[in-house]
Length: 102
Image (cartoon, rainbow, N blue to C red; front, side):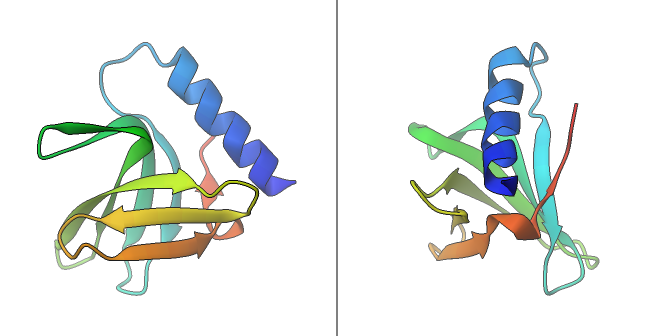
């Protein structure tokens, strides 16, 4: 049920956001003590717009940051993030994320 709500929130914030900046749609703590953040902004990397992917980023208490692209895997409760700096693809259970309601 949480994944359905997650998808609805993502779609609604994407369709109804009138601001030019990215809105945070969900976040979760990371192992470094910071957060992984999912936004509703289209993912653009090295000048290429990736269809059906959205911008994500992480940060740590020491100031380390990184950017990536994210999507919900079809038919699953999994959020997939591709981290730009490392090229790693990571999968996280959707229920680990706190959904930000507008």
